Image (cartoon, rainbow, N blue to C red; front, side, top):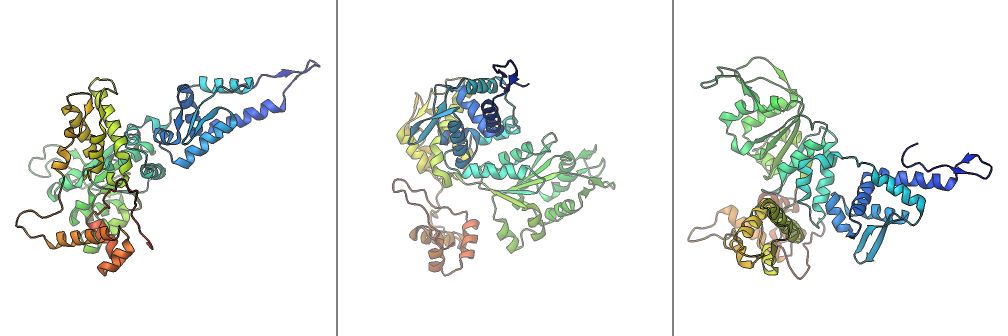
Length: 453
């Protein structure tokens, strides 16, 4: 008989019997806490009995979508092991059930050691959770990551610079069955053709001048693990052909060697380039594109989730304080400084925001981070306008004209394509090619439109 089993009740006849009601309650409670999310929320609420939490904060804590969290906390409240303490927005807190049997069930559940999930053990997951704010876009990405980690399918991670592509790649590896093997990361942009073979395939002793010993390549080191090719869009056509052969045959030879080596690895690639356009232009092999793009995950830019900027800034500031051995609330942002952070376009995305917060915290003399401590952002903000007497290039002129039209029609792509006299497909390709995004709007609550898309 385990911890959650009800004690038997003795009937007047002296025989030991079970009543139907406790058995039914026990079975329902077991079913309730069988869900890792419900069990996690229940433990979380009871670990902070004097606090109440809204759905948004629970979404951030557990990295789950709103509907999943709402359903779970409602089921806990309906069963009587949690309570709703406010209406708008609804907040939930722990509750001690009045029913003795139910209270005993809850106590036994809380006394048991919680199983540590794979996600809780993953350093990359913890890092990714810090990148989640109020916008659900990153939570959707989290669901894609969980799906991709269940198989060995090749994954292509798309996103602008600084959006966290390598963090996502490491998450997929750490949540997959290959987590105990090695994760090998290669930056293709920093790898010229002359070094590609020796870095990826390795080499034998004497293969070239300076090859004094045998060296295994990244493919060999990634055997039974994961090979991550960052900035794959910068790979040359020669390197692409060699990579394609390995993906098809799962065999390769070291540079200067004759022995064929079998490898079993999972491929994850990342790029901030428009690979589809590169394929059409002949700059990226179509057959390789379909090999690496079996499952695509797109990371949103920081400008696409502007509401998250204050949340992430406060989180990075707390981490900075902790790293400096200060109390987490020893520094804070003024309203004016947050306004400046919200108005900045963040071309470097999360990476730039994190370094900006550290710099502002370091330069702020007192507790408050003032507007003057972050004004350097706007002083160094990139400008799309040509300077001096230099005439704009054709690409610059085309980009500027497309931006003007999109802004004029409030990013209604159907209308913009009509004004530009091009197809919507061509417009979408230009938006990707020039990495165009709508300017953030504050105050008026307007959103971009895409009627008929």
